[in-house]
Image (cartoon, rainbow, N blue to C red):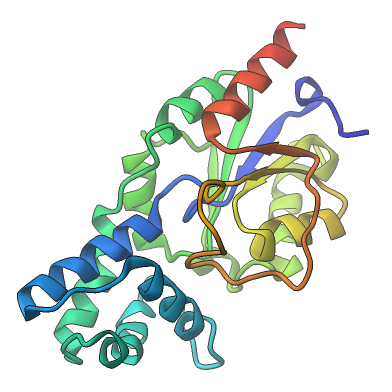
Length: 238
């Protein structure tokens, strides 16, 4: 049986894709470039091309790597293959929006739990994301801080060490994420209680996120952050 939400002390969060709508941000930026170039792009096709380019062997840290990614996908989308547009895509991360329910849900959860961000994004981008979300985090771990990216267990181990210094353990954590590949599968392997936020529940495919080799059934499953907040409040009130 899944551990009760009422018994947990920390909620750790994937940020990009779970709390921040990176797919919407990428599609909006590419659509703007396309309009200037007098062409049109299909958003889902763009995300599929992005996914293939992003997870290549020569990928860099996110979102800086979006410059390289753009140069790979631009010709396939009929967009101008110029570095300045790749830089525009990278810089657009500073304006990406949170999902409509993210900030309020985090505010509600922060009253009862210590919230920890775990993001493969670089620190400069995370600072923008955190501000967009209302700066709700008790602590934050970025790719710059850990020197690695999820699903590397080493990323998670650094978080375990952090809560360990506060007299807690991974058993006190709920890991919340939308990515089966980066978060849900590995959190299960590491023995964590996890929660899948299925952001693309009304859409086919995995969008801009790499498809996992196999699906991991989560301990908790919601299609929104609002659903998680409501369940956590109900658990605490019981």
